[in-house]
Image 1 (spheres, rainbow, N blue to C red):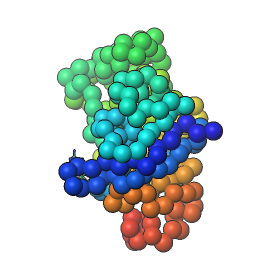
Image 2 (image 1 turned 90 degrees about the vertical axis):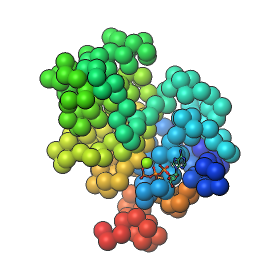
Image 3 (image 1 turned 45 degrees about the horizontal axis):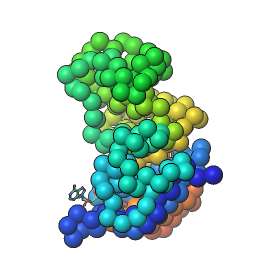
Image 4 (image 1 turned 30 degrees about the vertical axis):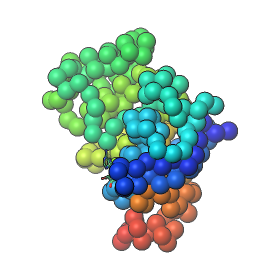
Amino acid sequence: MEILKVENVTKKFGGFVAVNNVSFTVNRGETVAIIGPNGAGKTTLVNVITKKLEPDEGRVFFDGFEITRLPPHKITKLGLVRTFQVVNLFPTLTVRENMALAGLSAGATGEVRRVIEMLGLEEYTDRVVAKVPLGVQKLVELGTSLLLKPKMLILDEPVAGLGAEDRLNMVKVLSELKKSLNLIIIEHDMDVVFALVDRIIVMDKGRIIADGRPEDIRENKLVKEIYLGGE
Ligand SMILES: Nc1ncnc2c1ncn2[C@@H]1O[C@H](COP(=O)(O)OP(=O)(O)OP(=O)(O)O)[C@@H](O)[C@H]1O
Ligand SMILES: [Mg+2]
């Protein structure tokens, strides 16, 4: 049973085709990674799915609804939520204030404390976001996304810039989350990808060049050449 369906989506910037006729579906309960070299079109694809950008062609369906022409806030309301490659928080507000604002906008103020505890953020609640470590900021951003009650969460490079310990912690958190919601993870760290997902979609130059189980993708010749390189 599918929850997300992307049909022939194309996004151009001037004459440059950043996402080129991309189609895929994600089934309920499936955890999927989108990988590919820098500039492959991964973030642009997510921007089009969540309507930060308008697609030039194609259609997107989520949870039984066509969302191609819906504004972003309506898409969020349907339960499709994304995080950003660069942390997207109010830097001068505290961790608690950022979470409270997200809770307020989602009508989930009662959930704020539970999410803070689940993410192990108690000791940081009264600290200003700009002054906490990146690992904490990434968890706060995840928390603000969770308060929007997603059915599907798309994470754009959840461990980018993090040290080994913070990476492990994020993997632990995401391993728990994937039991109760659909995750799509864009990530360059292949250890994180292989630890978490059931399926890997590989993009290169705006197109999907492979889509399959992690063990098959690991052995795919084209993928090895283009992305996994010497690994
Ligand atoms: N707003 C924009 N205007 C013009 N070109 C853009 C815009 N956004 C992205 N691009 C170009 O589209 C291509 C795909 O970019 P995108 O950010 O989607 O790649 P990515 O796969 O997410 O890469 P990375 O792994 O580095 O995050 C790149 O060549 C990028 O320069
Ligand atoms: Mg990107």
